[in-house]
Image 1 (tube, one colour):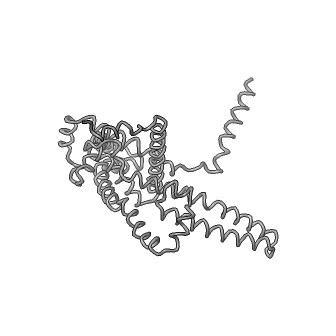
Image 2 (spheres, one colour):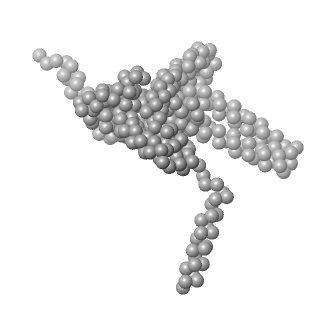
Image 3 (cartoon, rainbow, N blue to C red):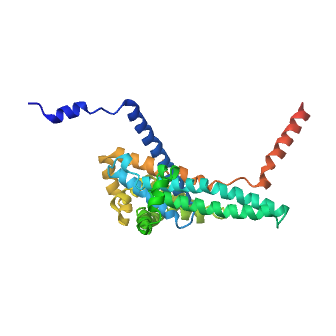
Length: 317
């Protein structure tokens, strides 16, 4: 006798190639967007004093995961949550555009005629647009804050469930659970301890600064040279010690130099990936928000140099 499940499995159509390709593309786009959102969030935290220890703790946690042998795809915690936050920020920006436009028109109408009917109508329209956009976003967040939730408000479901208390009563608890899922306190504590241990290892740089602060030579120069050698020795071990500290989650682990040498002999490639990816490559985008524009007073200085060189060339010609 034939197994009836065989006939069912034979008759079940396999996923088509186009559908599989679409799923892969959607996964790739979603992952790239989540990574970009994570970078922007970490860069925003890096630009805030004290709070930037959270970003340091996150990077140390990533390096510790890689050092422990976790796969690269599983070494970025809170990646999906970062994508949700990034999607919410973009949705807020887009939803606020009509209100900003109406507010601008209302301010222009106020300049032309403060008591005009157009200015009053535009003010009312701006307030109405802001209220509608706010309620639209809250309704999308209640339904999961997915891309489909933002694009399609589900009007039938809205009129069926929006007026019920049970639709909204769990929203504060879900918001708190989502915020707590980022585990910010743990990253802050990890970053604080990592910063303390790192500063101890980089203490020779303080000696260098004090030794050469007034351009002194002699004994100060000799002391500074010794400090430079100590700093070079510290930087040789520090990235691996940071990864080891994050993996062990002990402050004393950041000083276990002999243990690092043993572990490096056992798994050099894991340590290399942890250092290169989490301590050298990923911190680079975090400095994007620290880039400052050139002051207007300095922009015209190259023009003077260029004009002077042009005149010298013309005089020699």
